[in-house]
Length: 212
Image (cartoon, rainbow, N blue to C red; front, top):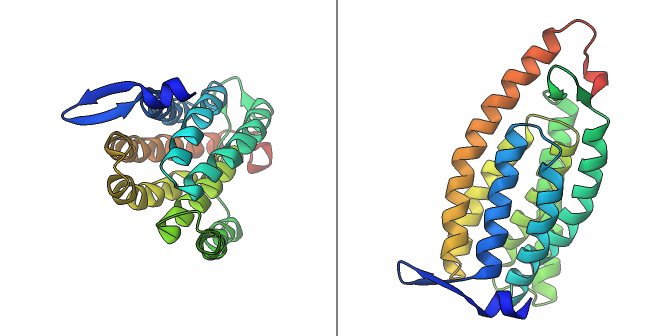
C-alpha cells in the first residue's frame, strides 16, 4: 500500500497518488453500477474502501477513514440483501421510502453527525470534524438506504457531495474533489432512474413494497 500512496501521476499540476486515483475510479464505478442495480456494485465498493482508507489516513481525515471501515461492513450486507431482491424483469426491486423511514434517515444524519463530530474533535482525529463527520454519517445513511432499496438514498448522496467537494479541496485532494462533482451528476441520473423503476415495480401486479 505504501507504493500506491507514494507513487502517482501529475494532472494539471496536481499530484495524485495511485491509491487515490484507483480508489476514486472504483468509487465512481460504484455509482454507475448502482444506477443499473447490479450486484457488481458491492464487490467493486469493497475494493474502493480498502484503497481510500489508506488515502484518508495519510491525509489525517479520521472521519473519512473510519467511514471506509463502516462502508466495508455495509457493503457485505448490501450484497447479501440485493441477492434476495432479484426480480427477472426489474432486477433489484427498489421503492420509495415510507414517511417514517425518511424521518429516520434525517434523524440519523443529524444526531449521528453531532455525535461523530464531537468524538473526532475530542480525539483530535480530524482538522475539520463537522464536515468530516457529516460525510461519514451521510455515507452510512446512504449505503444503508441503498441496501434496503430506497430511492431516497440518492438524495443523501447529493448532500454528501455538497459537503465533500470543499472539504476535499481544502485537504489538497483535488482529484477526489473533481470525482465528487462527477458523482453529483451521476447521482441525479441515478435518482431519476430508480424513481422510474420504483413506479414500474409498484404498478406491476404481485410486486409490492414487501418484496423489497
